[in-house]
Length: 122
Image (cartoon, rainbow, N blue to C red):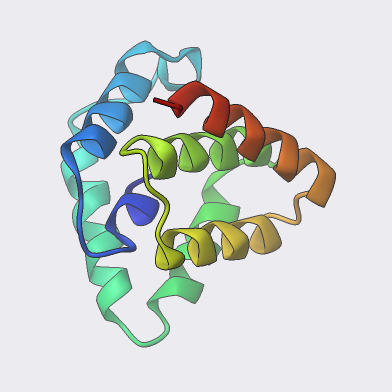
């Protein structure tokens, strides 16, 4: 979620609110320590500044997430990307790379994307 928000170098309030709400409200984060967000955010920023940082970030994603949560992670990334009402080229490209790195079925990914779009229409 943080990487998608930071991908266009313009972290918007709506995206931050979406991340915070997800961590506070969703059952998937029930055992997550919200104080870790600062550390995770800094790690993501540091990785995005490195030449091969995106590859390292994807490696951490695959190591840290059980496969059963790959679609959930993608859905949360899509929600953050759609939260501000605009999807820039860099956000779209990162979502595409996340789909690829998590080996998500294209049809399932399209359904997730469509759901995020529907939830964030104005």
